Every structure is written in C-alpha cells, then in structure tokens.
Amino acid sequence: MIDNRIGAIINFVRRGSKVADIGADHGYLAIELVKSGRASFVIATDKNSGPFDAAKKNIAAAGLNIETRLGDGLKILREGEVDTICIAGMGGSLICEILDSPVTNSVEQLILQPMNAVEKVCAWLKNNSWFIADVDLAEAGGIIYEIISAVKNPAAVSLQTKKSVSPLLEKFNAQKIAKLQRVLDEMSKSPAAIATEKFAQIQAEINSLKQK
Image (cartoon, rainbow, N blue to C red; front, side):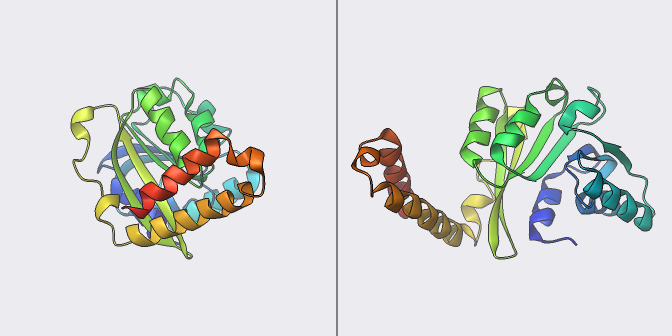
C-alpha cells in the first residue's frame, strides 16, 4: 500500500499538520499520515464515488478517525480547516485548476505530485506567490516521480533540495531526455515544426539536462 512515492509525500508533511488529501483514491496516504502521527487531522476527499467508497472502507478497516468527503477538489473545504494540502497522482494542468481557490490561500503548505506538466505547476506556484521549499524524487513501479513542497514563507525554503542529491537524479534525467528526444524526433519530420520556438526550447532543455 505504501510505496516510495507515498512515503516521499509523507516525509514532506510537517508533524502535527492538519491535512487535506485531495483525490485520496483508496485512502492510503490519509491512513498512513494518521497512523504515523505525522498529521493531527486529515480530510480525505475524492470526486468519484468508486475510489471514495474504497477509501471509506479502508479507513474504517484501519479504525482511524479520518473525515471523508465526496466532492470536487477544494470546493468541499472551508478556509482555515486545514493548513496543508496534498494533491498527488493528477496531471499538472488539473492540479493548477484545483489550486485556483480561496482555500489555497488559507493554508501554509502545498505538497504536489503531478504526473506531467511539472513546469506548469512550478509556474503556477511562482505566479501565485508560493515558494518551492523542496523537491524530491521517488521511484515506484519503475516510474520516477517528482514531489514538490511549496510554502508561503520564503524563510522555509531549503538551500539544497532532496532532488539535487537524490541517487535517482541521473536516471530521472535520462528518462526525461529520452521522452523529450521522442518529441523532438517526431517534430523533426516537419520542416515547419523545426522552425518553431517549441522545437528550439526542447533542444535547449535536452542540452541542459545532458550537462547536469
């Protein structure tokens, strides 16, 4: 139930936090947050009845006092109910849409694990006055995930991220280069695509990753 990805998310949660687990799926993160004592209070949410019912069942089986709510994103939370929001396993664009809520401004920490469009999530954080405190990598099921911890207080930002010293970094960069190269190879079939700014940006990103 608890893989390295979920473990990395839990490690970013400050002890005693009040956490909203958005898109809780089967509730494993919420359960472990309470079992480990990392969170003092957890609300587990999901907008789909199937995963929501599974989460409720698993939470009941664990005998833990975790509140569950069926609903969309942050719409079912009130400002000030929690101080930490966790959103994991969703696309980056969807995460940004969910975060566009007054509830986001009432919390102290965001812990995000986008499945894609990480750069878009980072841009959203910057544009909305959040500081990336730390980033970590975790491998589960042969996939390496990026986990972002963001805060409102710049004094809490780490001078050296976990990602920068992670033993997974070289493998992560290699996988990212391979993915970008596939996009570049496909674009190379079209002279018009080669002339675009996007083509140049991807080339520059590949070159930058190769130097790391």
